[in-house]
Amino acid sequence: MKWIDRQVARAVAAGRVGTPVALRAFLYLSEDHGRLMETVGAVLAAAGGWFSSPARRLYALGGAAHGEITVLAEFAGGQTALISAGLLRGPAPLANILVIGNKGTLRFEGPAVPEPAPPAVRRLLSAVERSLASGAAVEVG
Image (cartoon, rainbow, N blue to C red; front, side, top):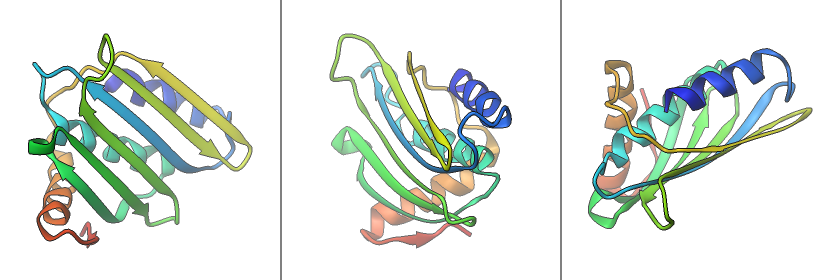
C-alpha cells in the first residue's frame, strides 16, 4: 500500500486537510493474496505517520479465518482510525481511504495490493493479534 502512504503523506504535508484527526480505510483483497493482517498493520503504521502520532490503543474484530479484520485504533495525539481489510467483494482488489482533517477531507481510491509487512509493523500486528485473541481493547506498547 505504499502508493496510498505516499499520496496521503504528500497531501497532509501540503496542508490539504489541516491537521488530520481521523481515518477510515476499507481494503478489499483478492483471495489469492490473503494478507489481511499485514495490510491492517501497514495502514496502522502509515496512519501513525500521517497523524505524527503512534497508535496507543486498539480493538480488533474478526480474523483471517473469518475473511475480515476490523481495527478501531486510538493514537497518542487523540486521533482515531477505523481500518477494515477483507476478502474481495467486487470485481477487483480495492482500497478506499478517507482522511478527515480539521480543515477538510481527502479521499483516495485505487488498487489494493498487499505487501509484506516491514519489521516496524510487527509491534502493531502483535497488538492486533492480542486484541483478536482476547476480544478486548489492548494497549499497543
